[in-house]
Length: 628
Image (cartoon, rainbow, N blue to C red; front, side):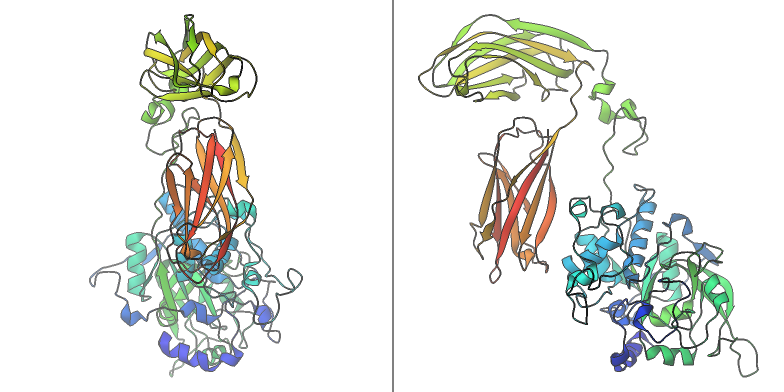
């Protein structure tokens, strides 16, 4: 029977159908599973949604290809997980695939991603299957590809689905989405790093096609489809089951009675295929749970099984499987006739930068610490420290209200790679709040030491630490500039000096992080290029090392929204451009690199524009998180 004809049969039994990815607690009159929560299964509709029939999918391998008799990818699998009483089998099989792909890629030797977050993302960000707990590998991988998911620690899996104890609305057949996702992500998850995968695709579920994919790509396959209770030796089966088969993880092709009984209560399951064994032979069972025989009374033996990783934990299902506790075997014929198959590829991961003093090859290029060319300018790899002092005691008047100001120069020799600069300034002035003091490196780079700070205080007698020239050569003419920006007061530069460290004498200080925010809400005008803007005035000075922008926006169709960050008087960067994606609200933290190396002090502006008609929203708040 094809998947298409089976789906038609199952639709006729809709009145008796279980919700998508529902647990066995949905069958109160049936036997309970052997262990509490171990055998949660799935409704069928989401698992088959939008899946093309095998006839429309090409075979993956060559017609004359020969595959090994046994094959497995167990060595590149994460531990077997347990979905417990929640019906989120496709979430677990997709996360299992993702963890396997990251292990194969090599950047995360022990990945553990959040099933809880993926369940939320597939429904709240992708907007799929909003009236059921179930999902599909296609929609799950769309969420991972478009939005990314976080590590398990940012939002740990909750093994029990929400009920009225958690939220009074979580009862009945038409519950809000939050009841299926167990609420919204906590702050730690919203701000955590998100991990992605390439876009997924359907593949043919024939044995040759699945073998071709696994053997050539050396990556696993998510399958999902019809669940036959007796074939799976499930605790809710109305027919006798085999505990021996359950312990070995054997799933044979269903007999006719099992097909009929299971069609009365349609359900499904999703698992991860990780290998096969052409030689494995398992006797099929009849409706009484006894070996099935042919017309001559001979046992009907099924040969050829895929190895799969399940999500029912360990200690029961597959406990005697030689490939590992929690793994199972499912027949080629079962998979071809009743399962869909979905795959993705290895992630593209940018290696981290080399840390130059931890005795580790962080960027995985075969070179460690100071042997890595990335560390050529690192303080830890610099030659022995040297510091030279230079002073200019020739005084000069500071012109009043003059944009040119006074300029004083110091010649510095010898050269060498700068690891730190200290500038000491002695200037008299009756109103230091008028003054801007800058230091110019011989190459023309500028560092602002003082920018109209101190209001009505007198004079500037102060030392300034400058790190923005680290890594440059020290040799040449350095210039101090003092500008009086207002009328009525006259001052004088008396003297100034430089201390220039080369090598490791003055390593760059560790970055300090601070958050600035604007919590004044603003309506986002509909289809208006001007949008709404909110500004944050930052009075702290310093060079930006890292910057993040966090936004909280409510909007019924966030695909209309374009967000632009700018520094008033400077450049701007588009954080996200309206892409028409069908999801509501935008609560996200963006990593912004465009302003790294620039001065922090100034006015920062966020502009939110609604690019289309019919929907209105609100910018609730936004914040800057900056490390200097």
